[in-house]
Image (cartoon, rainbow, N blue to C red; front, top):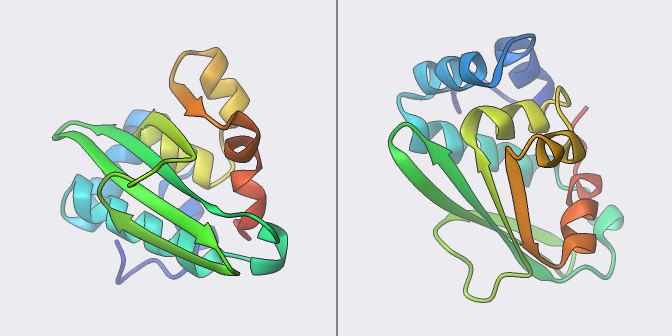
Length: 142
């Protein structure tokens, strides 16, 4: 997926318009597996980071992403005008969000909201909820 998808808009065109299960299947097929699809997705987040939108933000945001291959942990560290995503758990997470891969994809391309997924018990967040809610505003996802 990483070699083919240059931004979130392209990702929307490839996986949009379907269910979470369909989005996950398409992303995994494009990426070569769940971990590779997640690597590509979080790389897109790094590229879409808008430092001025995250002014004063400092923290590590952990994502526990459930996939058919098991749960994958990813961390997005934000601070000092920079954003870095990596595999693995946060050393000291500001917030931890648990979500399925398909739902994360739909959330990322704007076809689902965190509030919607939370209400449907398909997403949960622990820790600093205010910071987690603001997370999407730090990226140009459109």
